[in-house]
Length: 108
Image 1 (cartoon, rainbow, N blue to C red):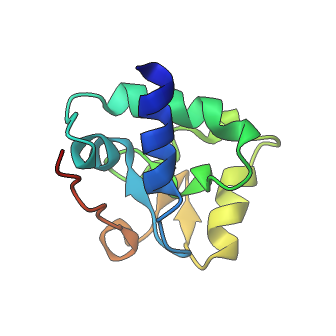
Image 2 (cartoon, rainbow, N blue to C red):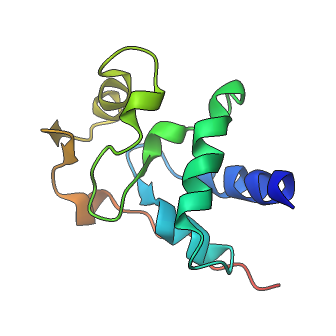
């Protein structure tokens, strides 16, 4: 089940438009597993072998770069977001609501 769940997470993350972010919880809810935000986090931690998964666009529910320590270098996650026009101050996305992308809820 875990691998299938991870692939479903990656399918959603690949849809996040450049210059937008979403949260672990929003992805979990879109997958019909609203209480699985932590498992989405595990999927993101395991995504680094998938170059086509823009993991830097997934943050916590208040816009904090909670996964930044899983990226090479101290500020790579922030740099990737800033390259897309997203301002980050003290590991927090500025105007989080403006940059937030809501994934479509998948009906099973």
